Length: 257
Length: 366
Ligand SMILES: Nc1ncnc2c1ncn2[C@@H]1O[C@H](COP(=O)(O)OP(=O)(O)OP(=O)(O)O)[C@@H](O)[C@H]1O
Ligand SMILES: [Mg+2]
Image (cartoon, rainbow over all chains, first blue to last red; front, side):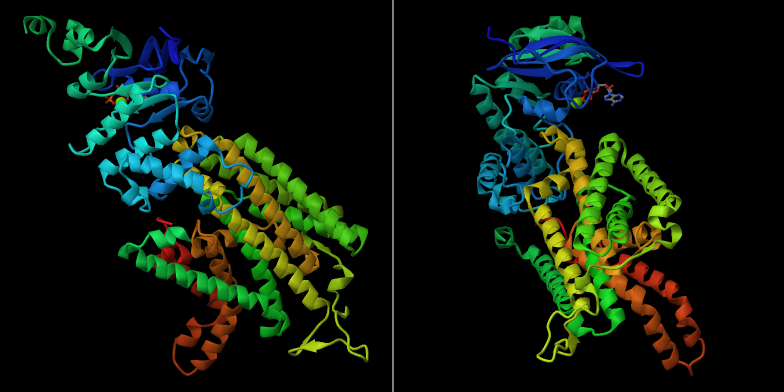
């Protein structure tokens, strides 16, 4: 298989006595969509935060394209091509939807030497931002403040910000949680698009089994911060340990079923 | 401008009207300041107009910190004072020339920039409250230094010096055939006029530079940092670097305003520059005008300055007019002006919770 784009080795973080992520070693490859499953509090979000740099590990290392990035700041990691959408919506509430996305485009492409021209004069940046708004069906509300959007649209904007970063590692943390049945497919189709690009690596935290089955090339299971299963979707879903801890079905019953 | 055109939803209309009002008021203030020597021909009004110009720059640069970027600093008058003392000390020791203004101004500005970098790099990583404490400490140390090194700074008495010859009242900018100074609309074209327009034009340039910064893509990044520092970092902005840069920019502009102030006043002392009373004034001006709006600074400064300079007069007149009515003259006694000023603040904050400009413009979708 091709070289991993992002990899963690023995990654561990402790909050006081509580070990939220415990010795997780795992590599993710371009062209691969890995779904991360695990019960509430398993450490999925914390694992993302360690990779995108909001948290610093107590032990272990993180590599991006073979280079160690364990101690880099989140902004430096964003520059290496790691992008993340947050589980809890995490926007710039008073800025407009367009400004939110434009900020991410601007961070990715820079604004060149014409630093002090009016922001509205940077049409290339605004055009790119509009593309991402169209893709997430937010172009109609481009001029509303982010805080004024309904929950579903805020979740979409969360994804639009990630798209605008144009990363090569995408981390989605329950992107469709709380979305209505007609909103979720827009986002899932976008993720499916990215999955088809052989140069992109996608990590997806998702609970809904139909979504997992439809998108996953691979599933890893976290439980109490530990990596307890890793493999192709059918195999992992069939594992007794997974059925027990994740689906809450006792191992013997699962076997019986 | 295209933004306003696109936001054509009916709900945007009151905000657009409010924005119109704010910009028209700011424009009128700008025009009044531009023609102040002709409109208000007494010495005190001139003094008030010049102070308003300088404080607009001071408050606007503070708004860049607190309103746009969300940095709470109490060291803004320290930077203002560095620019003022730089020019003052140079004018005193080198004599009243432009070389002294330049050398002193540059020295003050460079010192302000260096201090801002140090404070920024050392402490903009920490919690906002801790950063505010550091700036408070730095400003206090600077005040102590200014009063201790009285050989340089004149201590509590400050320094009195002359401005460049161009600004002397005896200077004739225009003369008639008889060699007498020309009067335009009843105003002598002497050095006082030159001094006022030096203040007005430098402050105008500095204010426009600030407007340019907040309207640029950099301005949006600063707002993003204020709104959600963690996400700004996550999408790739080095928050500490941006914060430090903006702290330095604000410090440099405050120092430049200080230099202009020192040249105008021909006196520099702790009370006109470093004092915490001025720091509180600036804070109130920005809050009353509307944080994160830039034009709010213009409105806040004018309102506060007029209240500070003319409320007493107004009350004096009101007390006399109501002399026959019981109780009222007592309440309107000029000695109670602070009480009324306080009342005015409370009413303003009650009716304009986001400041005058901020509330009128309903900041958000811009
Ligand atoms: N900053 C923190 N300080 C202390 N404990 C934390 C912190 N962040 C996370 N934890 C703990 O670490 C554990 C893992 O949390 P995490 O949010 O990663 O779980 P998760 O798998 O994403 O759960 P969910 O499915 O509910 O999103 C939880 O027990 C949580 O309380
Ligand atoms: Mg989570």
